[in-house]
Image (cartoon, rainbow, N blue to C red; front, top):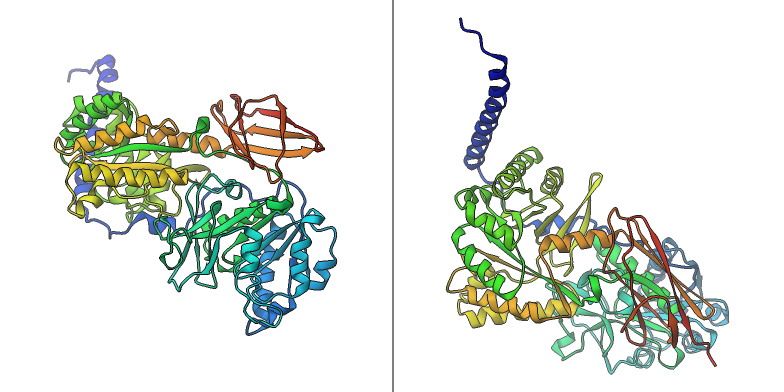
Length: 605
């Protein structure tokens, strides 16, 4: 028998290995097609149960808070235990945030001289003593937090109307919300009370005695589930749910709902804790600092993302239109199809970012983690062969994903998922996945399939719908994603609508237009920035620490300033911010470095 030369073995072994791997992957791909589909569900159902990684709700400095347990308010409820449970909820949260809390009767609160903040929770019936405490707070240098229908009745529980609320907040009108199955409150990003709260965050409330204001500076508004304003009784602009004022030396925060109304889910509890912290800090006159949601001081962000699947060849029409508009897009390739369009796939990679839409457009969520891992590893291998690089982004087919999808995607070096988040925020979210993190980039609003289901096909109408949703997300300070498909908006007859949207985004200098991976990378980097601010005498000291492994560029720190101060000088560039907001343009900070900046104020006369 002829002996095989060693060099032949050395050459043949890798070739055989490649053939074996190719055969295994082919069998695995065929097996994936043959397997039955899992039951259908939306990834938003999974997100509802998950906690998002948010900033610490700890107060920046010690605060003395008095929670007023008004004797008259007790008689409003069927049992003293009702008011006690409301007071206990406030005490528990405040103590967890680092406040020194004291629960006082109305008379004891009136005699209190050292409190920084008085909280009057859900007290429709109020004694004269509590009313005097509220009125005298400003002269004592203290702030006030009022909630729900506070002071709408006198000490004998006889109706008085909304005079106290309107007088303290400066609202033009106040009305009780009509009965709703569920109450939603949405937070735009530009308010002093929304520090560290994601843009467009939605807080879910159980139905209760909730009050809406007509107020020009509302910090949050009553909305529907999809973050659109829903005013009381459909009265124009009567939708204010949270507001603050510092008029006449007063520092007053008003919530039209009660802390105990908040739905008991991880997300809602976390948003409520941040709102408590922000409200207490504002009322106490403490500056609050946070990194703004978007780099370079931009108001909002926007991305265009195509699912490249059926009608794969249409992607070239979209790529040409977007290149002409100067907008880089994200293309989520169905990699099994992409192997038949190698040249076009590589052209798309040059036009923007390449992500994956799965190998076969079959559902992922609902399969075992091992099955999902195998499919996602396969699509990453496809992309390495097609465009020379793995994807950081996954667009799960039909937005069906679960925690197994998230774990499997992180295991194959994915860093973000584009999908539904139950419309609970108009911004990305960061989740803990084992020892790693994964960004969920949310799609808020309609994609082209949802619009087509309404039998809308005229390009002018399509453009109007998409731009209307863009303006809505922009107003929230959030991230707008136009998610569209190769078989619909990328078609030659509909792509003019995509081009018009792209040109509008490109012309909006206040908005950061980026690929989805750029947005996800920024959101992760932003989460690793820690800020602190403290006023000592006539100086504000701002400390910014980059805990990440990369250079941080483009960050802007926003500081809520409860008391107006005239700026003399600063050793860092300041951006326009208004009377109650200071904005610091942070120079690039290396990984694991800390920088300190100082702003000098004029001394009061």
